[in-house]
Image 1 (cartoon, rainbow, N blue to C red):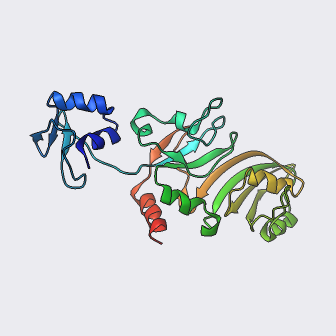
Image 2: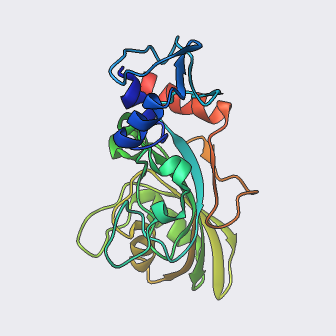
Image 3: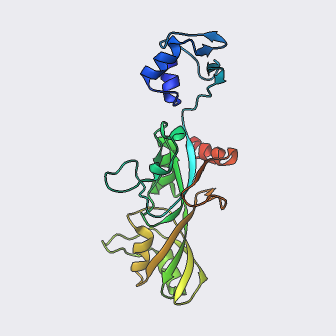
Length: 239
């Protein structure tokens, strides 16, 4: 990899800014000053430093976010705030994108990455990766609803949803439930409950596969995945 490309990819600066750093002799490779942006480096072997600070090359970035309401699951939008707006400059240069979509008013677990292969493994219906949601429902959720969801309810457009596992946590005029599904159609959880005559009034995603929302993450905050979480992601790609 070219030295200037590595530095630019790691957010050190634009190609022009990197060129200026090289000219000022502020970049070293294995302790030797380099002034040539075209010089080849091996990110896994060579030690590259800027002003004495080593630059650790990372091709992919993996972030867990507790999505806040009011943000859409997109990278850019002319009218709405996106989940990317919640990220700091130190990670935005990796150009991460949200894996799957959460509605604007939905909270909870959202993975952001620039690893397209992993994103496919997590969201493809063929992979049968379970997504678990907590919801408050306007209306009493019953055993009949559990049966209907397990069979696969028919949505408003005639599509029969794949079976979902519904668990009733509290049954009242406002019910609380957990629902696990393996697909992600537009507004799917809301439309599934509409199919049985009920309305979702609060929705939060808790889990995607083995990735579970960190309870310490405040709304709108994010963190890098842990080693065990990364190992799970790698296992999906290795299948």
